[in-house]
Image (cartoon, rainbow, N blue to C red; front, side, top):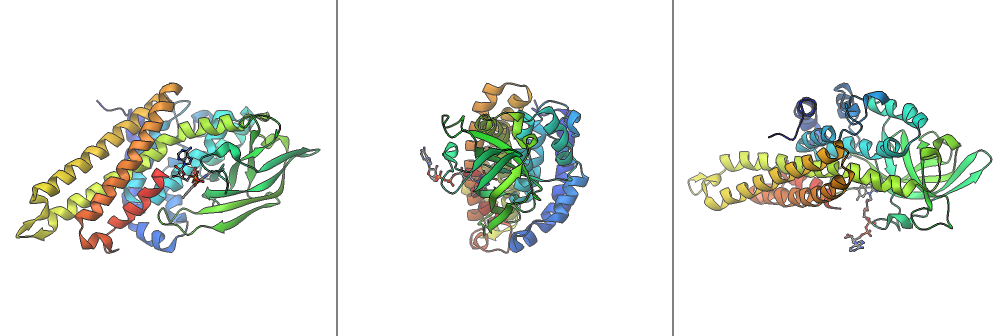
Length: 366
Ligand SMILES: Cc1cc2nc3c(=O)[nH]c(=O)nc-3n(C[C@H](O)[C@H](O)[C@H](O)COP(=O)(O)OP(=O)(O)OC[C@H]3O[C@@H](n4cnc5c(N)ncnc54)[C@H](O)[C@@H]3O)c2cc1C
């Protein structure tokens, strides 16, 4: 029985069309150029995909409070054609989720419709040079003053940075409190004085999506930009956001695995050695079967995790999302590496798109 609703299936079909008609033909060009693909973003916007996780009450098309299965099917289809485009889409879910889970009603009404319509893109700024896995060790500081808050610090690896108009920024507001209660989240806009983009990373994979350092040199924001209107809740918002966003990363993995599997199936049915196509060899068939098994298992785990979120089962989401992210990202790496293997020497070259799946898959594990 399908884990997907009619609504999910409609968005899956729409995303598949955009992926095949627009994304796949341009994937190589933007991978080589390492540039943000604005024409792909326009196609994603025109198809209405940027509103699928945002409830109707806030300008989106989502029928529920959270719409993680919509996210999963869209990310999966986009990633099947290009891992970078899957990230380019999914990072808006990551950036806007703190507003959905922790924003005031006014913040939701102000920002979510702009994101749902594609008018504004958003980034998520948690990691710092010395605070990666240990996110609560972050040092970016927000100090209260007469006009609100002044933010100082630097963030590392801000996906979508430069392209995005909005930035959810985690900063220390209460240094004397415990590690997690020290932190609050703010919404920074790209035109805010003191905000700038630093180093633009040169990446192994997902090259069409920018990943940059973001700098906050006394960025002044008023109280309305403090997420949820209260200090000390930022870390909880970040952790809840990561639970809601993990099925999306897992869906990247499932989509990449599916894309790599499809081109491996096609290639092995055409490549001849020893007087027959290589997919006639039993060991090749066993590899393809294992790849298909891992891909389908990933997909089902992604849908189960997203379904738990959509049903409001937060405990189930917490566990299943972690399992889905871990399993599907490992599967994407294994399946794409096996796909390269099945292409033999051609797999190591750029003649075929298969090596790109392997490069794009690596980030899902990190
Ligand atoms: C392409 C890309 C895009 C990103 N986008 C964003 C973004 O948009 N926003 C954002 O905030 N961040 C982003 N990140 C940052 C990402 O979340 C971090 O890279 C990640 O959290 C890991 O942190 P780190 O790189 O500092 O590695 P570290 O934390 O230094 O980890 C290094 C190694 O040590 C291991 N390790 C760490 N702690 C433990 C432990 N307790 N037990 C065992 N092993 C451990 C890790 O598993 C890893 O293998 C991005 C990163 C990349 C590469």
